[in-house]
Amino acid sequence: MPYQPITPLHFEAHTQTVQASFQVRFDYPVCFTRDALNPRNPLLANLVKANLVKTEHCQPHAPKLLPVIDSEVMHHHPQLTQQLVTYGKRHQLEMQPFEVVRGGEICKQEPDAMLQALYRRIADEQIDRHSYILVIGGGAVLDAVGYAAATAHRGVRLIRMPTTTLAQNDAGVGVKNAVNHQQRKNYLGTFAPPFAVINDFDYLTTLSDRDKRAGIAEALKVAILKDAEFFDFLYQQREPLASFETHAMQHMIKRCAELHLAHITGNGDPFEMGSARPLDFGHWSAHKLEALSGHRLRHGEAVAIGIALDSLYAWQTNRIDRALCCRILTCIETLGFALHCPELGEMQMTDALDEFREHLGGRLCITLPTGLAQAEEVSEIDADLMQTCAQWLTQEQLPHRQQPKDATYD
Image (tube, rainbow, N blue to C red; front, top):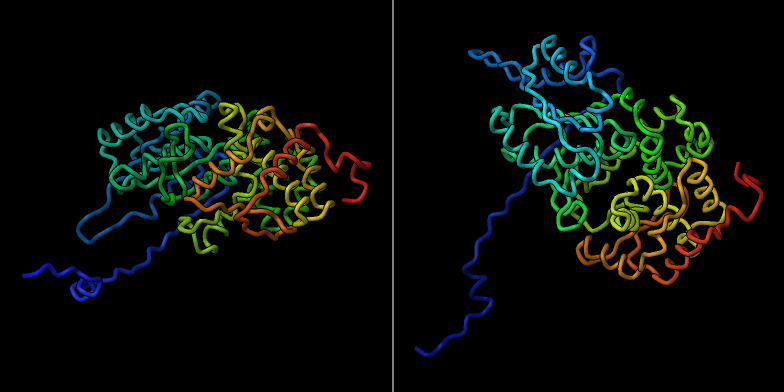
């Protein structure tokens, strides 16, 4: 027979499709408390026991928990291990011997040893999908341990107990887990909601001033994008927040967490299937600054600089007026953040924007404010103008310093 070319119509005639379509509902509580591991505080035990499954012929075993603790938290809270043992006995929880992991970005930058140790412990202690990993630590440790929990047995239940400002109001309440790979931040990761989050305000008392302050940057970010009243609160309370006044800090953390959760649950894209990342205002440059500094910069410190940079750009492109730009810069500075760092002068904006474009999958999408609680997604950035804005920051040629302090803003 002569050769007969196969046409698209031939394939269409012999192709059948069965469409799969389903939804998975996720629910998890984010709780705010004090002294969470005091035996008289039943919160942790109640969360775990509420999920026990009873049948007519089988009573459930005591819930099994594997505590994983940030080394920095362990250093400042040496009584923590005994607290865990006592709490487990008081509430009939099968508390396993704890595992300590290195705190800070190092646990994400060099994750191999930590991941192998956790996978070993999960196997040795028979931590299954009905058991719990209780991670107590800062945002980097929550990210890394969350990645281990999400990939063991295709998902072990994770209870997060964030111990830093940044983790309590942002990193610890969402659905992301990740470690770095080949010098790329969060290159290996999962979207896996936690079983529960317990924010214990008492852990904040032992933080350094830098770590207390760092998390306020995320509150400022989400307030500018989502909540004008919250921004006004941050601006009016910037001096009490700069001195870490208790009531101001607790309100800031709770409201910031609420806004992040509202975005996750109400935005329609909690797993970021699209290219837009609406809450990443100030972050595209922050990630680059962190890497350039060898993670000398805290994430929140880099975000504060990123917010300042993008606010200047938004002003120069007529998205926001000068008064709002000045309020943002004044708030950042009064809170105690630096508006620039040496690495900002080293950044080549074209390269940094291209790198972020690649991270997003090929299409640039940067969130810029167009007013308080108003924003737009931008696919084109004038790299030269952004470089000029960076120069203004490094040379301290800033609009809020060219008039009497607070002349028109309060």
